[in-house]
Amino acid sequence: MLSEDKLARINELARKQRTVGLCAAEQAEQHALRQAYLEAFRANFRAQLEAQGFRPRSHAVKCSCGHHHCKHVH
Image 1: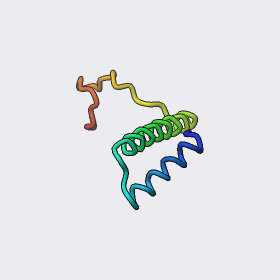
Image 2: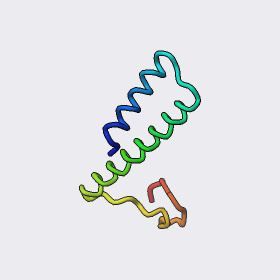
Image 3: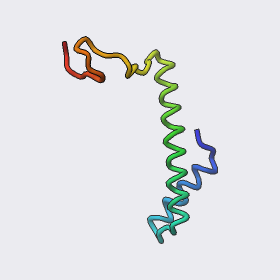
């Protein structure tokens, strides 16, 4: 997960955005921090799922009708 100082900065920028607004540099920083947070969250969530025995589906596998990502029932 993200460090405590980065999480604190995300919250600080969010509070500032709601009150006085952010300059362009702060908006870019906020975006980068949020992307880093989401990346860490997704990696952690994926690890939790895999620890429970869930494995991601392979997108290279075709169903019996020959389509990739087929969602219909055969």
